[in-house]
Structure formats: structure tokens, C-alpha cells
Image (cartoon, rainbow, N blue to C red; front, side, top):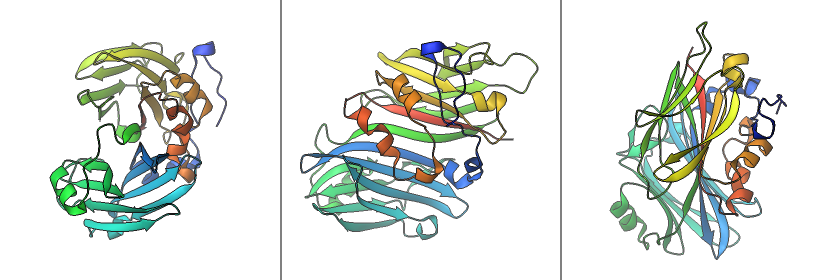
Length: 301
């Protein structure tokens, strides 16, 4: 990670340099990575679900790590095998047997790799659904012949997503289990002769604006969404001073120590893209520091 000078003293933030050759890996860009915290035999475990998309089609993977960064098991459905859109797999670990069930035969996809409806993925441990994703809850419970997930079960702790646009970048965001899903839009035009300005909107309403962006290309600001304070951190250095292949990075987090995490951890590493994402947040999550959404915004030239 390159050490760019901070413009904000102690309030500055720093992100890994994304203008390296790894940015040529287009497959790495079409990925959504979600991390969940659960317990197996009373021990903390981290479930990483990765959705991917390339010219071959859609794919997904599931990895489960323990609290010592040891991979207990992992499964990867490659895009060229995605014709098998439903199935199950039993994975043996040193401690237990874990079942993974999925049905994406009716899954609905937008422009990204993650489905938004018509699917389920279930992870079963000792006849208990420890994680259930998707809107086909009844079908999943019936197929797995297991007990529904308990209240306060697996906790959604982080999501990383890649978004694309020229001046406007949009996605969906939900910051807690009880909050609603919001339309999140990031607007920034750096192509003109005027001083660029960064605007972030939530449900069409501006929630923050950064002027004199060439001097404030990194920073942080706190907003309130659904009564919950959300810290927003941004790094648009690549948009202003980097190559056309570089992305800007935004973090929306409910964590109290988000800035410390942001400055101490590189947020992008193509060599550890799929299975080590949960490791980057493990220490902070053990302190119950909340949820983080990290967006890599890529310009379509």
C-alpha cells in the first residue's frame, strides 16, 4: 500500500493503492463478498459468501473459517458449472460435518453477480440452519429437513461490492436488520474544468457533499440513517490523480473504530480476494463493532 500524504492530520484516511496491475483483472471486479458471524459448537466462525460474474456466467462460493484464521471448509461453484443451479454438498471438518444447500434455478439477477430474489442458500450444522440466504425460506427448510435459524443467529457483518458508472454510481444499502433497504447514489464528475464535487444521496436526498475535492480526496464524515449514526469514509485519489484503471473506495460503517480499521488495513488484495476477506474484519467484529459496506467505484471509460 502506498503511503499518500494525508490532508487531514489525525482525521485523514488511507486506502490501498488500487492503480496496480491487479486492476486489470476484470473477473476480480465482478465480485460481491459478504461475511457473516456464527457459532459452531460454541466457537466463533466466519462464513464468507462470494458471488461472481464473468463472461462464462454466474458463480458463487462459500467458505467457513474459525477464529484462528483456519479454513474449516470451502466450496466453489465455478461459472462454467453453474448449469447445475440447485444442489447440495456435505463438507467434513475436523470438528463436524457441514451441509450446504442451494437452489438458484429461479434466481433473479440485476446487473451485478448477486441475486435479489428467487433463490436460497442454506448452511446446516447438526440439523440447524445456521445461515439462510434468499427469499425461499419454506423451500429451504423443507429441502434441508432442518430447524429454522434461531433469532439472533448468524450476523451480517460486512459486504464488499464493485459498482460501475461514469459520473453516477448506484447500489442498495441496508445498515441493520431492522432498517429498510435504501437507494444509495454516489455522484462525482472529474472530467470538466471546474473543481470536482462529491455528492452522496440516500433515497434521492443529498446526505453529504464534499467540495474542493482535489484537497479533500480522502476524508470521513458522519451521517444519520434510520436513527443510526453511519460513518462515511472515502478515498477518490485514483479518480483525480491515478490511472483510468483505478477505483475510488467508500466505506459506510456503524463501527465506532472505523477510521482505525480503515487506516490499518489494505482494502484490496487480488491475491486474497475470495477466502480471506473475513480475516480483515475479524478482530474488530469480536469487539461487536457493527456492520460495514465497502464500495469500489469503477469508471466506465
